[in-house]
Length: 148
Image 1 (cartoon, rainbow, N blue to C red):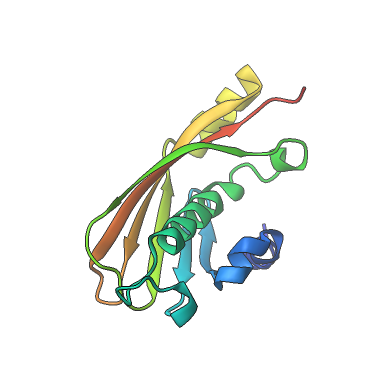
Image 2 (cartoon, rainbow, N blue to C red):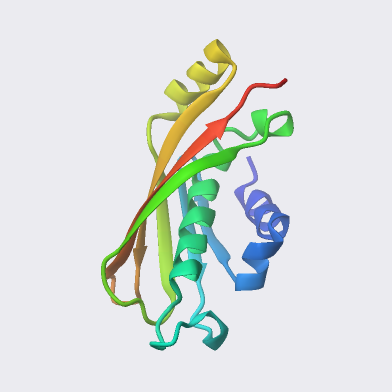
């Protein structure tokens, strides 16, 4: 599996993520890392990273975390984010790294998809600043629905 080709394709697939300047730094089975740049356009009135930009980085990382696992199925099925929760822990300044980890093993999730025709799963995301301080934590709940 060519992870570099997948990474480049994902960066081009979502125009909003390109607009924000999000960079997919890592893509693997059950793990995704996205970087949010330090950009004046993404700041709030306090001069820190905007909450919406942090959410977008976490959401993008969560999607990146499961793409390799479900690559073959994504040709026929479209993932849907059913919900998300985010907790902002401290003011986020500078570049931010969003690291996402898929809940459940690839084997379990693929077996459920095969058995039920759809699968629901959660992806946990930690957003950290350049010093490694956690600035936010997020969980995104995804549905990979069966065909209609």
